Length: 336
Image (cartoon, rainbow, N blue to C red; front, side, top):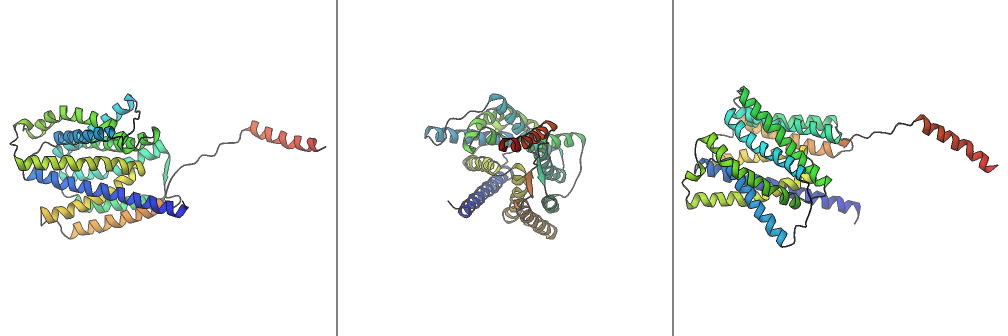
């Protein structure tokens, strides 16, 4: 296959992966918002546990059909991933409860600088000036869209910090595990989804009761709410899978930067389906700034030097130099 056709094929697959993630992510947010706002199912952590339980069933079926090949992931690596992932979910829910919506959004935006820091420290990634500026423009645009009232307190700040760092570590670890152990997205989900489902379904009801003072087993289930829960769990399969695909193909930073397109789409969808007054001039301005930043980031990071690993040249030792001199001295004698 010619280099050009390979690049075109990769670009097509990359675009399809992003669209898959955007569609499923926006879809699940809209469904969950309807489930929680309209039908009062406010048990977010338990619902996430159900999402991973459904994803586990999907991986088991695919394994039985032979679409997922056996793979190995050390228990210690799995344990670290589960800790990061579950602290991310719990931290986000607690942060939303203890902080204003404005500070919660600022915390979510700070995941990009944290993800950049992780790549710089662990992967020795170097960002060009244009790449850094484009990330900053995205942050400004999304901030204009979403940040309104900003108030912070000590426990809210701690919860937000835990949420930000654990989320950034979890997303970095997805990329790291896929590369180190040559795992596909399906393989990694097959290892992580059962453990996340088990832990969240155990912890979730207690955490949700603490956050909402309502018991999930006392919820007034009906046909419509069960239909929305089932729909949410079904879409979650695609959301979980597409997240692993995108982070595996790209990096956690790219996933976060371009992932803010989902934030903009959610705002637009929310305007059409829920809050007609939510879309005003400064929100539209923020969207435009964020989209320009994403386009700039895509262009800047794809250029040579836009985002690359630092290369270190090995120092030439005196012994090596002496060896080279000896070689140069020996060559004339061999000719003689």
